[in-house]
Image (cartoon, rainbow over all chains, first blue to last red; front, side, top):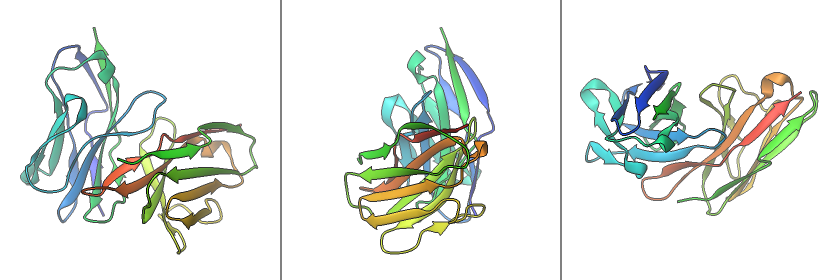
Length: 113
Length: 114
């Protein structure tokens, strides 16, 4: 079975600073990888996904993620955060063509002025 | 992308009662999924709902507690039966759709049991 680890429970970052959220997965074959964001009181919004091809994936809101098979990682990055990026971020993995997602515990991002 | 509508968006329910949550998608989809997010927690898959067959439940979830219907390719319901305060959660509907089978979520149904 697949699993996801998000080592950082909470990250505080200054507005305008860079952000990196870590995600490690465990899965025997090629996974589908996703990053979702959940703002307070809201549902889940897809930031980006990786299925195959270029290992650097561009998403919405200026986010990108890099798939590193050798490290079983799919870290999310943003060069310059905005106050509106304060939210909960979830990394998720699904087996190929299965679509059943296993989620990490989530990382809460706080943005200070 | 997909537009996924869930009803109700929020509800407060008495313990011992049951509530049915609806999920409507603007496209035909083969598989729909139901997730639960308990307060302050991550999401956990409850079951997979395929049209024309019985729902498939994940470990720890049973049909008597969470009966699911899937009458057509754009609609599903999840019932939370005999509710207790431990059932207070966000329940989210999900579908796989589009190029690369992107997985989308509804806005969730926020359920509080008192």
